[in-house]
Image (cartoon, rainbow, N blue to C red; front, side):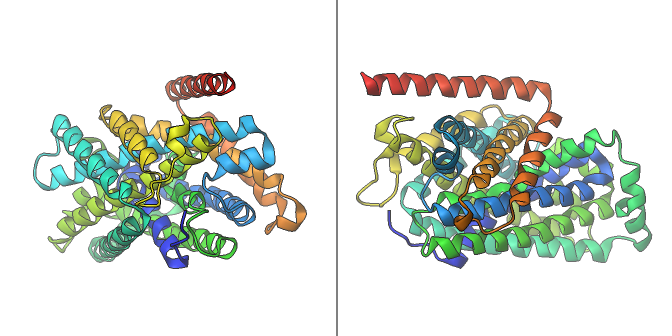
Length: 427
């Protein structure tokens, strides 16, 4: 494939993958678990994401090919580890893509006064998934240009929310709702804190989209690490600022309730700000942001599916590059179809929790691969990768057992499909 993405294009792609469902929806989901402690959970999730981001960066620099940890697992750990990572990525990010489509639809319909209609939300989400699949199938250069516009609107929207929120909130509310005293009173510590951290970690993992584009980035050994680190730094600041603003302005109970009732928590909270037009501005930012996340997820999913097809672990015809678009058009349409199927669940909490479980396994394997890098290819101390291994596989145990059953069943399905594919290739 052609190398058409530079440093800032990669950063914008990473931000487009991160600043969406995580900031506009999952903060409210996590607040329902940990209350005011969501600010602390955001910080802990950022720390875990940093370990994983640094491991991803050095792996992408040492082995700049499409496929992300699917390729790294094959190269540095074991083919089974590579397949597991690839399959978990497909499951995790398909669920995240469905969450983005549903969240985008929720904000749009709530803004139009129809937020409670689940059928309408699913219908709009399906239409959005189809439209962005068409866009991504048209080629990376067109997708990258659309992404820059989307991310710019998102950044302006979040900046407006934070500034307007702190101009509205009463000073005494800040210490009551956001300070350490409020964290100490969070329910169910410490298990609720780790559960919320596990769910919020998913909100940061869009930087992995940069690594999956290893064959389409210019000067990957320099560009990919710089882009990942820059993307993480910007997103960490924004997540902490938005979480603190929402909790200080509305309180944790109202923040969590607005997520459950309308799937549009920031827009609901912004309605109480001094500037009445801010709710509309936040809604526009949320709609464009989650559309951007869906766009970038379809890009990343199709590239991992492409890499798996090239190895014969998925149907070989999915590994073909379109001569007109220079992209994996068949893989794009396949992942668009899977995303649409998950949208039919209509439940944001279910799709987000499934994504959390599978993405933690994926990044646990990323860190294992980083530990196997030869000394001359290693850019950071080994303790960073060890910290990523422990944090990812440790947080997995704080995900609900129902999600565990679904995740294990899907993993078994993946290995069944792999076995069938390999036996047909051998025959």
